[in-house]
Image 1: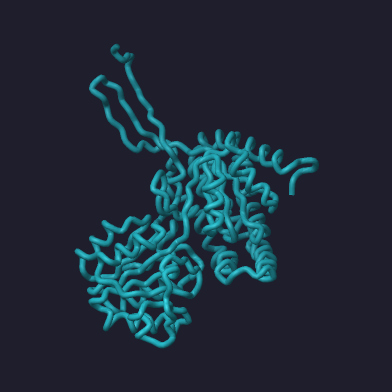
Image 2 (image 1 turned 120 degrees about the vertical axis):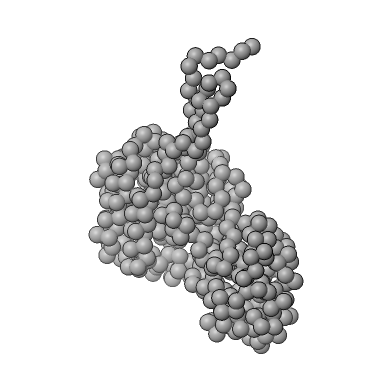
Length: 425
């Protein structure tokens, strides 16, 4: 809702001006104040748990009526365990070192100039996201800790949940004596607000972070008038090498695919080395099928079980976000690397092997934001990296790559100290 007489444009401009003013204060705010706000917000999340879950129930009811996919419903749903995870995430962010003012590097020139590279906030960050109400807390908390003001625009399907969570963030800011305009939630589901945030707020917003499906990311990257930290889809791979332990490989593949199928770190393609296909492929494929996962495979995968469907060329490129996986046999680590380079989205890939040389070859030559050895792709998560939380997983190759946490929400400036030096002509 806009204030009486406000257009979408005037409302967004007001939000932008308030965010710029708040960002100037946050950039100078001491760590103690930011941490106090985060801890108070975590306490409010627990205190208001019933209210938040009731709001989420209304969102889920509307989402089911609208025919949202199972993956989208899973992203939207909150329960006591997930809500407690959100509250703990705020506390974990508070425990992190304050990045603002950190000296990244320093050196002295022959002329006596002392130069430091120092972390500074980005300024005002606009976050546009779909379904996930937890992003309201994660993004707000990370921006606060890194000294940035946040303008949050959640999806219409999660509007009630996001508003309830945002109220907790405002409570935390008030308790710490920080401006509540440091974390603002766009109060309308009107899509015009998204367009204005992307195209009309370059005077206020320093960077946009989209988190959602491919169409959202593409729209933001196409329309934004400020820099974007974004990711495309998570077409993630698990490669089972010829030297893989079968039991370990089976457990990793099952977890990577089925722990939560709707997250961007879920595995979408299984690659199995021909050297172990006769011993490893069938048990892993059957385990997936028996767990309720649809498998679409090449000829070798189809030969393992009549339930395996024929894969098409498009399957190798698809992020299913569902209980579906593509499977094929490759000729060793080099062909696995080539397959990932051709079809992957540069998100997260894992190799399962006891061969250290093969593991290093994979880790060094796969050009994705996250590469793992003997671990599930579902560890592609800022909290699992010790970052407290994340705004998203960036597949960009500049500024931020991988989980976007507090450090990734800073830039730097050079501080130069002299003693009267002047540059000779």
